[in-house]
Amino acid sequence: MPLLDSATDLPRDITLNDENLSHTIQPTMETNGTETSNAILDIIFDYALNKFDDSVDRLSAGRPNFLTIIDQFVIAGKQVKMCLPAFPFKSANKVEKVFGTLPDKAEELALERLNSMCKRIRDVYPPGAKVTIISDGLTYNDLLNIPDRDTWAYGQALRTMTSQKGFDHIDFSRLKDLVKFPLPLPEKLEEITYVANATNFRRFLFNQYGKDDLDIDHEIATNPDTRMTYLGYRRFLESDLRYIYGHSRSGHSYKKGVKYLAKQMLIRGYAFAGAVKVAFPGYLRLSIHQSTGEHKVSMSLLDSKTGYTTPWHCCVALMANGEWISGTMISFKENSALEIVHENGRPSHFREKTTAINESSDAEGSARKQVAPTKLIDRSTN
Image (tube, rainbow, N blue to C red):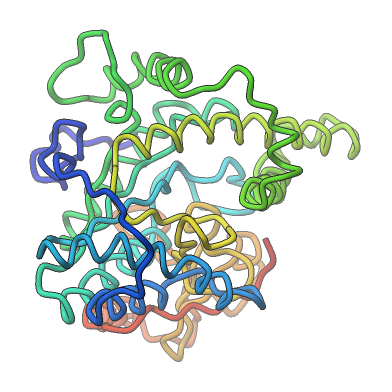
């Protein structure tokens, strides 16, 4: 597995000592927002999760709160800061869903989408905007049978991709940046030091932000956001772990185990969310999960009304008309009209066979020029 020898040219990680975190923004009373703040929020909403009948209502529910946060940046003439816990690792289901352990064209399209959103904000607000991606991979990877090495390799490859593609409006943060870590660490993490301390990073996260008295069943029953996340976890875990645990268990036993794992992920997620809140005060909170829309903006990383909207759970295919579609690797492989395209010596995405050989490079060039969100059509179910 190719790893990086140096990260000196990669987008820098955000740490708790970073100057970007030194300015704490305290939300004030609810407001309708300035004209500029409304324009910024409208752009962000263009990239929001939109596959539900009540998506517009959900976005409207959080608008006053989101405008309050954006207003603080605009009034101060500062860059709008957003944080997004996401991009953990590739799905554990390498049989049906994804090519392998490293990012591919699906992640590139998702990163480009976030970067394009920030570029559009800069057009209406010169200080611009930046999204900090907080990898939550180490929070959950041991539950899903994903090695720490794979989590490291995925994160490093994302940083390389972001740098090489010129996605200047994206930063990254790791789990180690969210906890007060008492053990000595080298100034720059490498694969060995990352893996050696992965268990410690998790342990200190749970020690500092975990709640022993958390009744997760009560939270699922009474908190709509928690319930939606729980149901989402159950859906993807059932397909993600099918070839790890599903073959050796009865259907009932497997689903019961999936429910248990989903609850364990929620418990860890509560600790992780607490750490994010402390480490990124005043940031506009983005999320990949369906929510009520009151406290965070649910984002669609791949613009699809149904099915796969997160790149680590799927593959993408370029159609002859220039449109990208998203779905499982196996469904694309079984489609005789599609072929696999390799980049950097490994599978990257699928392409409709009637597309010219150079269509891929042409599409990438045109994608660099896009202003509106990249449109993907999803022809699968999650």
